[in-house]
Length: 197
Image (cartoon, rainbow, N blue to C red; front, top):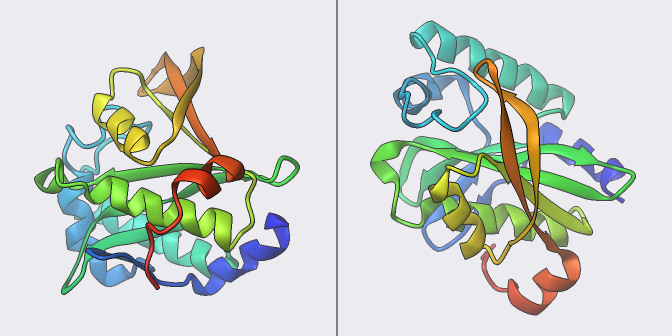
């Protein structure tokens, strides 16, 4: 059951794939976080505003550190094998304990778009969700205009479920979101073998 497993995020495990290392974010990552989080294009379809200065990124990492210590932050920093700079984050944005499901989310430095890094990271997190946390369903929500996010989810073999109209506030306006998902049964048929170690 996922509820009893969430305590493991107090010492969040490192996940590895062929190219990616997903690790705990640290305060030392402030410059790397500011690099992507201050880019308006990166957060264009996300709910948060770009970081205005390095102090925003520093405060964000302080909050992240406190949440890690309480086991309440479920994101990993995305790095490349042999290149420890944080390029973005990928992880779970929320859990529904009653339905044994979780929502996945990600963000990536624009310099690294189009290289399959986001989808490889998401596949690692999906594998962790099903194989370690024992989830029954993993889903994602995104603004329909965000075609890049749609491609990431499709590469993870997630499929369209529904469109929720005017359901989320994004930068002062209510927007539609599309919901994509993958079940444990679908994962077992399609997605095994994506993560190493």
